[in-house]
Amino acid sequence: MADSLKLACPHCLAMNRVLDERLGHAPRCGKCRNALFTGAPLDLTADNFEALVMRSELPVVVDFWASWCGPCKMMAPVFARTAGELEPRLRFAKLDTEAQTALAGRFGIRSIPTLIVFREGREIARRSGAMQGPQLKQWLESLV
Image 1 (cartoon, one colour):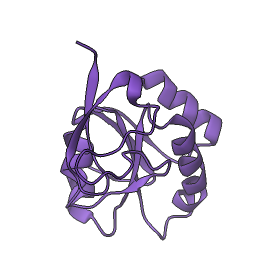
Image 2 (cartoon, rainbow, N blue to C red):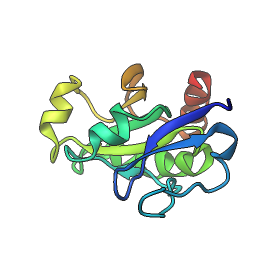
Image 3 (tube, rainbow, N blue to C red):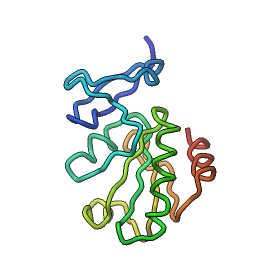
Image 4 (tube, rainbow, N blue to C red):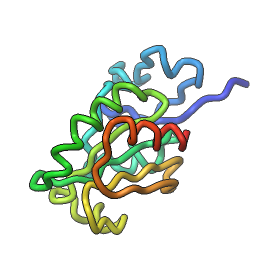
């Protein structure tokens, strides 16, 4: 049997199983028919975090940030550009630590920006502080 990954639809949160070789072919949700990948970071909330991050078999890079944080603002376009380059090998998401304080606390976020890479619901890597595009891409590619 071919290898596949389970991941949630960013639109309806339905779980989908996608063959590895089909990840790069614009897969669509079996329930709502929307694209499973948007080419941009997803916004995480308490309502969608479990489905999009914890139940996903695809690695997810989460940017913990806040609107008042200068380095977060500086890194936002770099993160978005990297999402466009590395998706669908990785899923990219952003979590506003001011709006989602419980989730930020759950992961012990003490400084921002902090990036955490999750695989199958487990944290596999963490990095705090802003990064430039090549540095971010190199770090992420070393993990997948």
